[in-house]
Image (cartoon, rainbow, N blue to C red):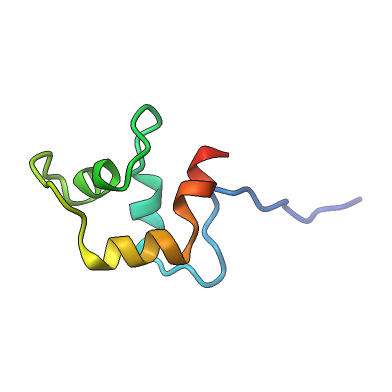
Amino acid sequence: MDTEKSIELWDRLDNESERAHPAFLSLPTDERTLVEAYRGHVGNPQVVKPSNTSTKWSREFAWAERASA
């Protein structure tokens, strides 16, 4: 019996920090943009630009590709 859990694209990556992963998960399903994810993560719908850290995480952890899957 194979008891290993298969890893899904939305699961936390081994090198993805415990702070970065919740930010990724906050990507809304109907508006998959980094700005919308950042707004949800910080709880401020008025934000016009994500932080440099969020932008870096998005690139480093392939959020756009993972979110679209």
